[in-house]
Picture (cartoon, rainbow, N blue to C red):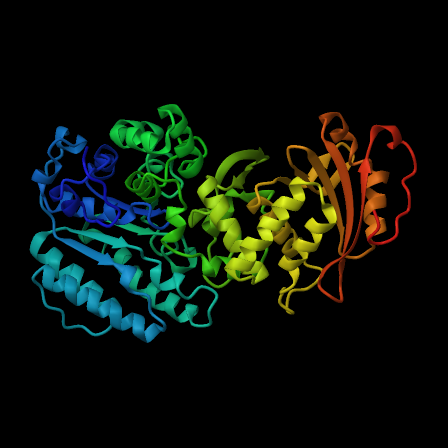
Length: 531
């Protein structure tokens, strides 16, 4: 049983160290076997991009001995050695444009020394051009590998200085287009695709593999790869958990599988989570622990989305702007959402999105709840526990009183009319406590704001941002939202609730348990807060 590692990202070190490597070289060979190739690939963080780049580097440097027993060694690849310019932008988390320029200059000088050339020009753009020209003049063709091209941007998203950093990167990456004749192969990787950086407007020679079917399983593990490469680790995990192999595989799928990078492609597992799970023999939120999505929570606070009914047009995935951020495409590219299905309307296609797996659903929901409510960790956990107990025992008033804690610290700059902000908090909290929730659930005559189901109860919620709790309850009965649920066998409770413009929180609510004997009667008019 080969050892596992989640800290070695260089292919040569992985092979020399005897670590387990899931062979992706057959797909890599398909990319490099032509005369020339220029590609872009976006994938979530910690998804194997750096390993892919270092594997390509070893191939183009002609290190045939590292690939014994792997798929590419059985092909007709010629193993010709090329000079490689490897720019790892992961270290370029600059706070300003000037700092970024200094970092780029350092990277270029380092690559110049590695390739035995000297640089004399000033400025990162001219210096990059000089590096490529000098190497190509000596060796004929050069390979350019850019890892984490967008790291300088990700640290500045939504900040005033992001445009200046964008301008620096635009000029820098534009050099790759003007030196196309000197290139054998180009790969640029990152977390997301910001078109206005000119990666795609100027570099129109790049083939985008991000949502390309041929590259959909290039990174991450398919089900077949998981079972073929980790049989002993799966068995060890099953023993540690006192479960069967089939039960263990089902848990692995639920926790870490589900990422889909093309509608018709197979889903893949998060590689770092799988490795850590096997290493520790325990199911946890490993990927989320490797980084916190603070900028995403901040973005969703400014531009909340309906997390229960997520759709995005296909064109949305090619219109990134680091200043005017579109939340849904960014959430897909960063790995917090994935493609679930698609619908074609006329000439356009709309993707339905969702959480890829339990790890992301639970972890991201917790971060959203904490980020939106501003509750400290211990208070958040305590409130969630009280809500679970109240919900399971049908104590609606206590449940809603606890829910108010999550709305108490809504910033003053959030308009009370922004319904999506409140929907996001509501949906996130109920997701965290394990309740099955359908926000804006469709019935035969309308859409109710939320349906929450437990083993014994069904709760129907109608909220009013403008209006009273009685009006919300009356709407439920007038539109007979409860009727589809009466045959379920569980107790059905309807809740009309109103938000207070003064407190910016849940105000009053009225509840009623619906029974078949009185569904055709006129409902009682209840006073606020009285069941």
